[in-house]
Image 1 (cartoon, helix red, strand yellow):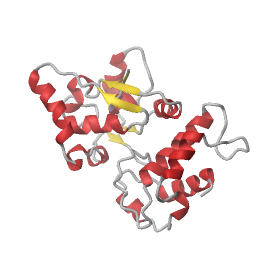
Image 2 (cartoon, rainbow, N blue to C red):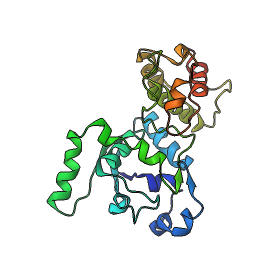
Image 3 (tube, rainbow, N blue to C red):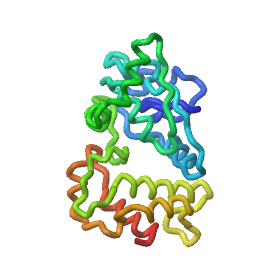
Length: 224
């Protein structure tokens, strides 16, 4: 079990939860996910370790514009969708104080993709920027070459994370793609090598990710 929500994900781990909500932390704005947390999720997935999420709503604070450190509120479906889209996450345990809150979480199963979409909200946070960080939100789709860009990027990140956990850097002679990521990547209908470098995906990305560079990196890492 692990606490996953966008506030916790932006800050380094701490034994004092009050540090995560201190006003001074957000006074100058905040950018992107803490790299150690990102590597933790990717490492877990690369080793087949599933994460059960708690605190998906941060005690309800990120459902309130007044209380959210980002200066904007998310909905219950957006919070659940964000947690489920993190690498290695298998399930979300939603806290509830009454039957109405429980019903609100259960209703996630019947919500539309538009209701679950957190990307636009993240892109418009007044105090937080996610610029340059792929959130696997799929706003870059559809691709003219029919590449599943989000999955290619995810498998690339997982392969890199697996090697870095062993002290091996991308591009080194010792770099090896784990069998799991290799198999998942091979099963995709289209691969990074099919990228047309047209850049249409980048015009749609809410987070200004350099997708064409990622596709080139994935082609070099996986070989096609």
